[in-house]
Length: 145
Image (cartoon, rainbow, N blue to C red):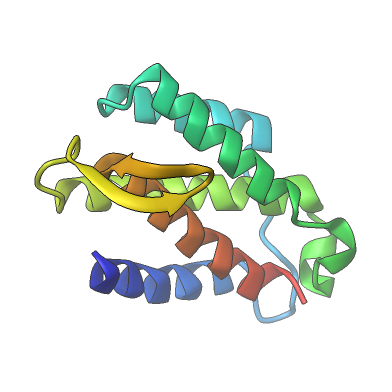
C-alpha cells in the first residue's frame, strides 16, 4: 500500500503542479468545494462505502481542507481562491479512488491503524485516507507557499 501511495503521490504532484501554468496562473477548479464534496460523496456511496463511512471520511476531509488558508495561497493560486484550492483536493481524491480500490483485495478487512480519532479502519477507509493525504500534499506543493 505504501508503495502505491508513493507512486500516486509523485503522479499527483506532477498533475497538480501542471494546474499552475508557466505564467504562474492557476487553473481554477471547475466545480466548487460543495459540488466536489457532493460528487465525492456520491462516488463513495456507489463504491460500497456505508453512509457512516462516507460521513466520517468527508467530515475529516472537511477538517483537513478547512486548515488551508487563503493567506497561504501562492501568487498563481490567489486569483482562484481558497474554495478552488480545496475543491482541487477533493477532485484529486475522487480521481485516485478507482485505482486505489481496484488494487485492493479485501476492502472490508479491519486494520489496526490509529488515525482521525479511530484506532481501527477498514481497508477501504485507509485507501481514502491515503489518497486524500497524497492529494492534500500535492495541492500544498502546487498551490501554497
